[in-house]
Amino acid sequence: MTRKQEITLHDTQTDPNGPLERLFGVANAKILDFLAIHQYDYSKQDIAKYSRVSMRHTLRAIEQLEKLDLIKFTRKVGHSHMYKYNTDSKAATLLDRFMTTISLQECKKIAFQELTEQKQVEEQKTEPQIMIVNA
Image (cartoon, helix red, strand yellow):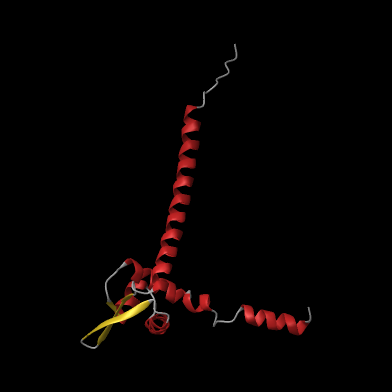
């Protein structure tokens, strides 16, 4: 592989326009986590506050997530635009299933680790203690 091909390959691997990069930026992930769990509509300010994302990143993420049909505008309250997780979207439904699957896998892994640790502690308690007495 030539140097030019390596540079081109490297540039395409880090392309920020890929679908996963557009979707799973840090701000996007935090906002999706928040809205998927809390099925109400929220203002941009509340989304930023509760998902712990700066307002600047929230505005950018909301625009991206709305274009991907993962969240939707629901109504206007005063000057605030309200948004919620778009449960009518096929992509959002699949993403919700994916998040549920990941969460279940993590729970199972934690439960298995805790059971293993508990068994080890119980085995240590039940091991016979041998005392050697010098006569």
